[in-house]
Amino acid sequence: YVLTQPPSVSVAPGESARIPCGGNNIGDKSVHWYRQKSGQAPVLVIYYDSDRPSRIPERFSGSNSGNTATLTISRVEAGDEADYYCQVWDNTNNHYVFGAGTKVTVL
Amino acid sequence: VQLVESGGGLVQPGRSLRLSCAASGFIFGDYAMHWVRQAPGKGLEWVSGISWSSGSVGYADSVKGRFTISRDNAENSLHLQMNSLTTDDMALYFCVKDAGYISTWFASSGMDVWGQGTTVIVSS
Image (tube, rainbow over all chains, first blue to last red):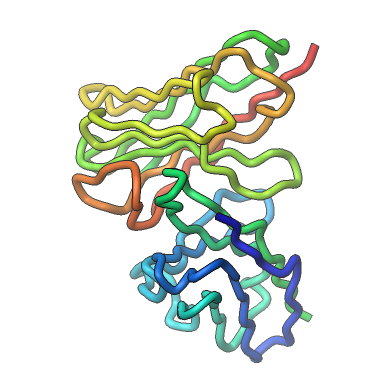
């Protein structure tokens, strides 16, 4: 199972960043999203498509339908610059799959 | 809540290494655990997972038959025995807690706590 993410997304401060994660019928799977800032460990920002851990700001939201899951960061701040990875459970091959990651740059 | 990895280092191709992870701040025995690695400049790759009770384990195809995951709930520790290492195994290895309570290693609820990682370098 392959997850496809764009290598990079650029966004101006205060605007919204939308990060797609493509996969065959990904809407039938549960998608988790992670943020990894430079030199740091990943952090879970969205789980089960659209749920948010308590410590993650409401500006982070997720959706999943058809062949695309999307992480949306509203009112982007400089501190949101990071690599973002989507993840699913591949129940055909019994392993986890990560997307290749999307680097978000705040202009 | 904290995970601290150890055991990484420089090893020759074909040799073995054992990684460990010390957990604190939560009831370790109630959660599945995973190892995830990241090669230099690359993305994340799931390596292995183990259920809360050690009753079930899973491996990525790239390490199956060479790596063995284990845990000691009494000692709050997770381990990864890595044999027959190759240069493809060179990476930063993260110890990761599953978010699901009394969880299996598969169909995760998300991976909600990550250690800082331990680096494995495979070189002659």
